Image (cartoon, rainbow, N blue to C red; front, side, top):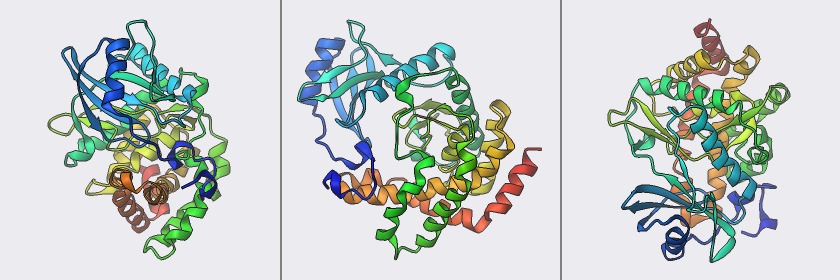
Length: 345
């Protein structure tokens, strides 16, 4: 679809399909700039083209950016990873690998708008591929808080990117309701956006800092037992925003828990022990979680129509978001606020 036909303004790389990078073009750059050779295996991705490189010296993740991705945002991601590893080496984030000349990025020859970077590959199982384990809720909350505590001292102009996945921009998704007007959850989607609008003024008054903003099951690695978090991946959605958005996004991906409310409470309690949020922020949390569910459904339905060739990957979190929106509706916003308040006293 042409940019002018987009129903959402300023969606950037999310709205523009691109030709995937190829191993034939990536391999020579890796050999010349990084001194790395081996087998490249294509991996899924939302905007970047990703490869796993199996080389004699180990495994690496090779990312080729989308041509519409701002170069400043890419630099911010790499800088954030270096900042996190320098300030807290125990945080399980991938290490950027610089070229033999000390550079972080190289141009992708077929398209100079695209950039190539290399990260150390983290082994582990994706959380989305493992059965739910009760300790995960607290592990995710604690890891998010540790991450945010270190990111509080990180500053980079590229971290303040204008991203459609920013919960503060949910109101801009109103045009995406129309194609789903006959969908069974259409009333819940509309209600979530309405509630978000009511709380937006309060949200915009909260302090901001860099946050990961996408602790979804495809970005988290767990150990063999599935109980411990051993990897945090993909800082491509990093933004400067209120901390409560980090927590809301993390909670919105706990839908595989047998009891979503209990998992949310455990995640929030673990976060609060390390990085306490004010009462005003926590009061917004139920509506923000519902908003993230709605955003996931609306954005992924829209993007799957724009880019049908990547439909399966784009829609991977859609069913869970639908389930979560319905589950949260059954619990009720006020009941969840009450349980949050009582559980954190």
